Amino acid sequence: MISTLQQISLTISKFIVMSVLGLFTFLFSTAQAESTLPAKDATSADSSTSATRGLLFEIKSGKNTAYLFGSIHIAKADFYPMSPKVEAAYLQADTVAIEADTTDTKAMQAMLSKLSYAAPDKLENHVTAATWGNMKSVFGPAIEQMQGFKPFVVTSGLAMQVGMQMGYDPKQGIDLHFINRAKTDKKSLVELESVEFQAGILGGLSDEEGDALLAATIESLKNREMFKDLTSIETAWKAADANAIAKLFVDAANKDAASKKVMKMLMDDRNEGMVAKINDMMASGKKLFVVVGAGHLAGEKSVVDLLQKQGLEVKQIR
Image (cartoon, rainbow, N blue to C red; front, side, top):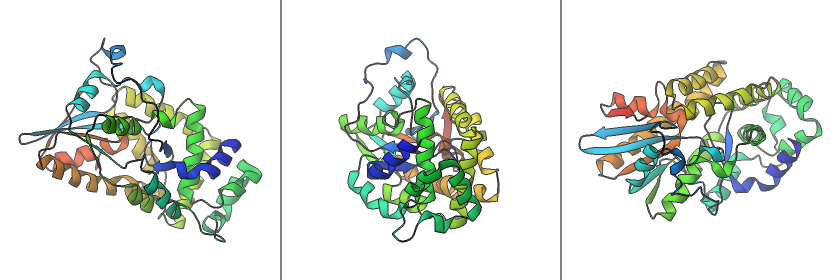
């Protein structure tokens, strides 16, 4: 873990943080446009079954149809190839909508100031003595490498390392897969948010919220809950179990009042903006394939829930 934290401190500009996998399992998604893609024609491995892995939804508004797919931002090679129905939903699209284009290097470099402290300010000044002491007991001298970064960056780096220990790889992220495919296939690529927008939210947590996030992350590492959560998320995603994914997010939010507040900011509030843009694009007649974090598509106040409450027909495709 220590060597990875050192690497993060040296190469932070190569990554963009995105929220998914629950409140305390934020992970980095790679930002290299040249990342290797699974072969697009390698669908035969899944052709023996019609079961859909991942959360795939069909949206109908009048004569217009769009598709929503739930992403995991850091994944494994065996997540590929995508299931045949997911492939079909992608192939019919002329427009692919994603949360943010993680291959936009200039945008990522610009967002660093929102996720870092300007010296002489440092992380220690923004957390409680109890949280800082707990971190020191876990990381020892390596804690000094974290001083320049805001809480979300630190928790992201820790969660990324846990994921990598379990075999996850940022280059296998589902968002990145479809971003690169859309560019290769000359499809229109549209951001529902932007790197700058996300950095503003993630870097704008109050000291109380950041402290709660760090404290919970350290506790999750010490009792190995983070390992269990990642396994649960993967299992639920592969089973296309929206209810299980929704429960993981509800449980994360209900840990305490600060967790609930942060979850609302990072999930519920963002869903409203995503829905507005999806509606606009559908109204314009675009053949749309939307890829957002799986947590945005499950449970109350999710993108799916909000679309249904607005009168659109939304059904899960299995």
